[in-house]
Length: 73
Image (cartoon, rainbow, N blue to C red; front, side, top):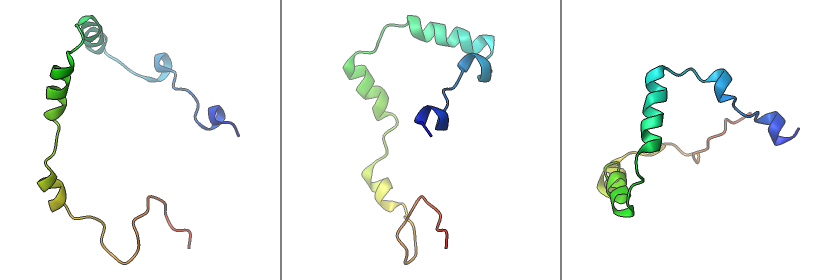
């Protein structure tokens, strides 16, 4: 099985429902000037999580190593 058969391309015109407001917002975004690198870094920093917060989160518990795949046994 080829990858194109396994992962068919998404036909945005057929399967993605958009409103007129969505289309207008995308057009406005396309016309806006690109951000300077400094502005982009500042934008990204708004989403940053401190290392203290990350260290305080609990991870997976138990004797088995964490896996994204289910065991078949």
